[in-house]
Image 1: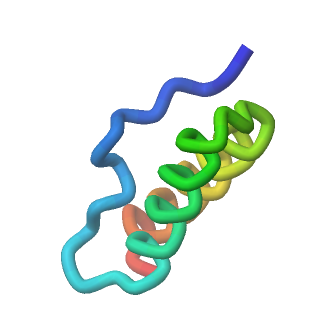
Image 2: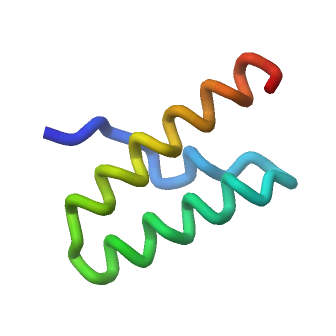
Length: 55
């Protein structure tokens, strides 16, 4: 079971890491590599928390 992440969750304007994570997730999805998609979802969630905490 994967953690649901909205398709645009990583799109924090001006953040290079957000863009890189979203790109990686899109590539993994295009390759139908659901394990990597899940990995990127976790990384995106962690990164979003850093934004929320002001880091």
